[in-house]
Image (cartoon, rainbow, N blue to C red; front, side, top):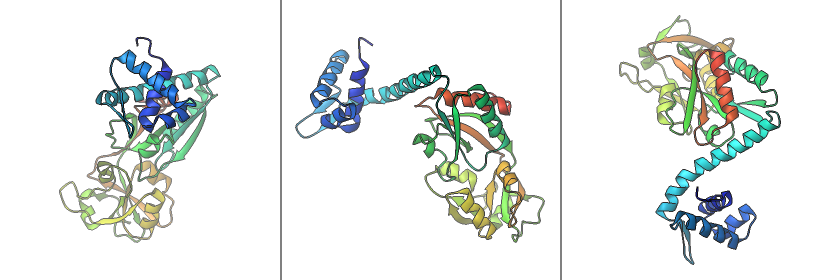
Length: 300
């Protein structure tokens, strides 16, 4: 890297985010003049200007924008590697935060136990994440990995293993016309209001959980939209609509007095998958992915 120092890179990153030399200095606990000195040194090593500065504003040059796009994920990965190696040197300490949608099924429980046996110094915490925001908690670094319903096509996320492939189930009130049925075909959704998902989840993901049309093209009446699983189950019990669920979630709530769960024919099976951040790789999250793959008998 031609002698580039980590402090020069940190100064550039702080300045790129703050666009103010004084605030960048405050973040790194150095003076404004020190930020200027580090930036000049970095630009000298690169051989071009990265930052444009006038008396009124600070901004990145096009080369600076390109440099930032490549530097940020590499720097985050380097920091994560250092932090995780330091934790490993102390005996595998730290905390792995695992998010999940719906319920913690047997696969996830076995994987957590396997991970705990293998890394006894690393604590595990599990947290339910909103049905309406499957990817947000991971992107906001509230969890290190998460088990979510498929599909997942996000370019910034790593997916795998994929597991728990099972036919979908329709939750309905015990008063619903489908309640006494042994199964229901997806074409019959044209006669049934489906409870949808609200919030920031991508459209393709929300449509998979509550399709607006049957496989044959008939319109499915839209029911209320919810943010959480419990909201959806409460509305279903009140006969405000029906809700598609994966089999493990249906099994978990199978003794609900006001609900019944009817197998669905004519739709793709539901699947769960573990997601991790591509930009912020975590050795602990990767180790958990391996443990989950072993628990479900697939490759990560």
